[in-house]
Length: 275
Image 1 (tube, rainbow, N blue to C red):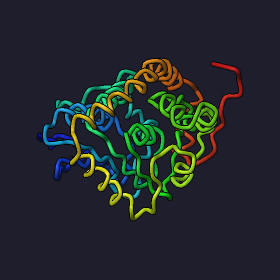
Image 2: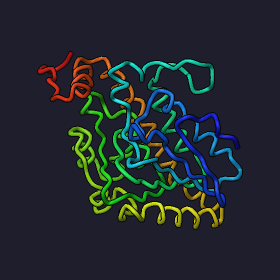
Image 3: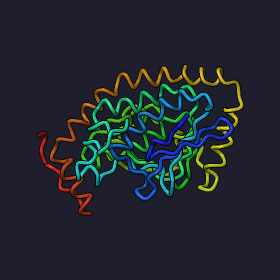
Image 4: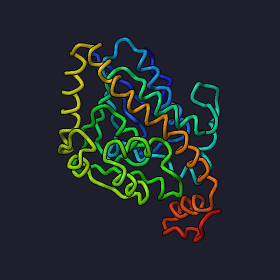
């Protein structure tokens, strides 16, 4: 399959393992509007690729993914499409786009190995944690920082974090936007393996090749059986969390948060019970 029209994603397939790389290293792989649309579509294309038995997801450079491009939010770039007529210039990012990333990822039959080479923040953390097996750098940091920019963790964080670490821990991390190291994520069972940084790709490729060489349909359908549970939770939570997220994009708190980020200062949030 031809993946040449992807600008911010790179796919390389060797021995039935497709290495999918988030590829904006100069921006810590922060997700722009176009990149968001690409991430929605890539799961459909990879699922249909007969040369792919396993997908290995990683990030270029020193980060896995810094989440949404906050500077782009401040400039309004995440709520509009870019120029041109290709299939990734689809206009504003909506709740439906957020839902499609999660649903399309959960629908992929091939196993997805997350090689989390560096920080996984916001939507980046969601992408990492939705992988079937996660191998993370001990020094990488995980956080869902939506609240830090004044919005709800709507694009999957409210779905996957409670399933992995329980509702109490999840609510604290989602409400405070705090960071944990890959080593801590391994200790509490949020990820499968926490290893030294230089071992992330080696261990991930070993796991990916083992699955690629294994009994294809037994592996795929075992995964899909468990994913029925994940999809049930997504169906229960995702529409509500995305709706709340879209609402918070309209608040003064969000506007102040992204402005403060760009100006490198502490935000001054509205001190009231609502807007």
